[in-house]
Length: 261
Ligand SMILES: NC(=O)c1ccc[n+]([C@@H]2O[C@H](COP(=O)([O-])OP(=O)(O)OC[C@H]3O[C@@H](n4cnc5c(N)ncnc54)[C@H](OP(=O)(O)O)[C@@H]3O)[C@@H](O)[C@H]2O)c1
Image (cartoon, protein in one colour):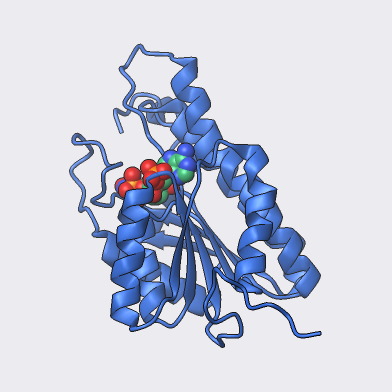
């Protein structure tokens, strides 16, 4: 009996690899989606703002000269929706080769502000949504003994600074989760990359930040793509942040807690 063609994806047997980007509607995620489209990937693009996703898909499809990018509007804090949506994407594309979790929020917090609602949202988007999605990717990649996972963390996860406790803690937790995934999945030949960007010019970057250079989302996406190709484990981008964070990580607490940084 012949199988019915999949109505959603026009070319299910397309030899292009498939990448899923969660948090693709703006900033680093949108730049990554554009770059991966240029590099030959088919794309499942997720986030809440459907209009932004539709616009991005149209742009990528026009540049590719064929339909390679598809929008899946989704709020990562709706954890129950993650397993069925993962299965739907897998069904639509028939394969997933690269899975990127990029969604993130950062609320401004006053120096004496302790707001559990802001904290909860930060942990849900920056940590728990990542765990919900990457657990799905890890189980698939383990079963097929191949695949690449990328988690967008931050230099903010390397140390608990004064500015934004939930953001630092969520990024630290996500980084440790990614390290565990890497160690669990290495025997299967599955690659896990942790990305720690410095300051990147996006909607998320606060107007006031320390006077250090700010990277573009495009340059950041290029560095991430190179790290995916080279199967790096941890990427600081730009690379000089690795040296700065080495100093910050090793700064003794009696000095560190006096710093405004
Ligand atoms: N910019 C920086 O300086 C910097 C530095 C280090 C790390 N990072 C990290 O880089 C990642 C990307 O951020 P960005 O700088 O590119 O900022 P951005 O332009 O604000 O992008 C954030 C992305 O997360 C998505 N997102 C937020 N809440 C979501 C939710 N509930 N459900 C689904 N998606 C959600 C947004 O999509 P919707 O709003 O459409 O849902 C958007 O696509 C974040 O994880 C951030 O923490 C940024």
